Every structure is written in structure tokens, then in C-alpha cells.
Length: 142
Image (cartoon, rainbow, N blue to C red; front, side, top):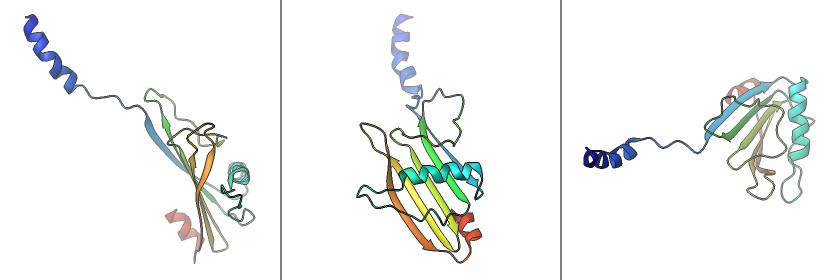
């Protein structure tokens, strides 16, 4: 019987699925202008809207409703998903934040990634601004 078990052992190891190192979880939330959640995201933008060359990106006085997409890597054993707010001061490799707002026919979008080392600081990866004929339609497409 022992030779049979030894022969099947490689097959069992091959058939077992590999557990993932992490799970990628993404949440998208919309916050109406002036709400406490909207203010939390705006305050986070105030602290993180500077490019690496020191230029401030975007007009935070011209924000409408905010669409926040926060993606992060979690350990596979996570039983509870973290809330999207408050946004963390630092992230982990693979995390990303996207913030979009449209007001007065101007759509603004910020995209952030995480500096790999040493601090896990959020880095402004891109900023875009565009004219939108209708902010409602622009918000629907975020």
C-alpha cells in the first residue's frame, strides 16, 4: 500500500489549488457635496494633491459630488472588509485611490498609487481635468 500512496502524493500536491497571497478588494462610493464624508475626502486631497515636482493639481474650490474608488490588497484570511473612509495616511504595495468630481461643467480626476518603500506614502500618479457638458452624465461614467 505504501508504494501506491507515494505514487499518488505528487498528484495530490498538483491538484491542490494554491492559496492566493492576497485578495484585491475595490469599493466605489459617491459622496454629495458638503457631507462629512465629502469633507473627509476633500481634506485628504488637500494633503495629497501635490506632484513630486511640488505642483498642486486641481481646484478644490470647484468640487461637486465626489466619486471615490479605493482598491487594496488584503490577506486571504480577511473576514471583514475595511470601510472606505477615513482614507489612510499610508498604503501598501498594490493599493490605489481614484477620486473624481464634476462641478460647473469641469470634471477633475486624481489617481494615486503607493510609494513602494520606505513609507508607503501615497503618490499622485495622474491628474486630469476636462470640460463636461453635463456633470450628471460625467458622474454616471466616472
